Image (cartoon, rainbow, N blue to C red; front, side):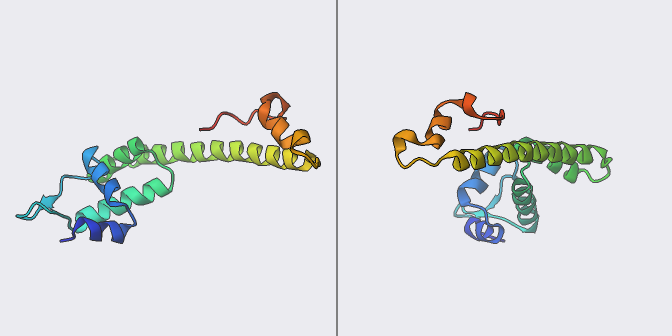
Length: 141
């Protein structure tokens, strides 16, 4: 059985994140020692590794919840799992398109800036007025 700190180190996940996943139901409530310390076994290690890898691939927590549900019922059809992965791929591809537009715009801004003074800086001018951009690169947070 693993303590939460050991589980965190083995999966590369912060302790606070593990607790959060327990709170929102992605991870089951762990067993506890008589002293109340959390203890995790191989099943929890595997589940957390699954969650961590899914997050690294950009899946939302809701999509991970769906994937875990399918994983917990292995006799079901894989078609819906494939649909979730396809949806994620479309989202990644859309982000790549937005990132490429951002790259092009940043390159253009930098290339257009040949001022010696901040008062004449083309980069700052474009950042002040979105209409100066060549493409709509979408809102980001």
